[in-house]
Length: 277
Image (cartoon, rainbow, N blue to C red; front, side, top):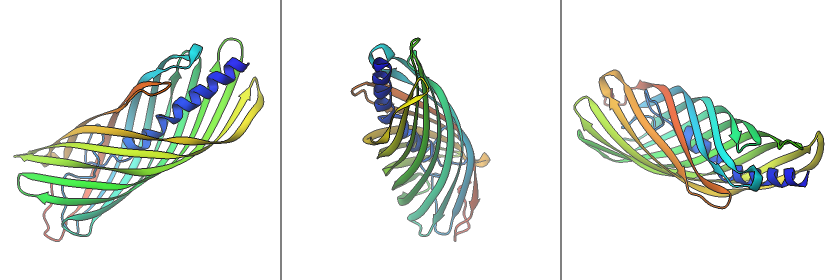
């Protein structure tokens, strides 16, 4: 029994170091028609322009956890939906806000299964210092609020344990996107960083009996994201790629998250009545 509880605590600590970064990957996703998320709704804007984006997301996370006999591969799959709004109140400045939800499940090592449900609300401000017929640069910064419900079932062949965690995490995020326009195409590499932390209510059950119930801290964790959007402007279509990499530390042996997103963006023209598409 002690070994099962010890393994459960190690797995919880491990999860707290990476799984709560999902909202930063998924829910800063903002583009017209995409297969993974760039960090902003559209590659450029003008005063008075409004963008509303709706879409769905799929994700796959892979890595390894080191928790003695509970060590092994991590494989998590998920689906989600989102809506995001941007309002450009100046030619150089825009406000954005969104809401996203996701459900994911998978395996953590040889003895544990997990399910996750999540609601995230990102808020941000965009600054567009460069906008020419050839190039666009947008800097963005904001805040992320996320509520998560996590359930883990452990069966080591001798004992069984159930863990539930309800968390509230928050933190800043920011980055930049640089777009290069070539005829009907736009190439937009981007970079983003996020740092999230918070608290979680955790309950442990061992063979049906509650052995621990209390609040724990979710440690502050920083992640970096790199991606590339290829936009076909006449059709309002964006093909994107993103890989999230979290470096190894402690029981975390390094993780990658692959995000694939399909969304559509509705434009309202700005004061100059010129749309990007």
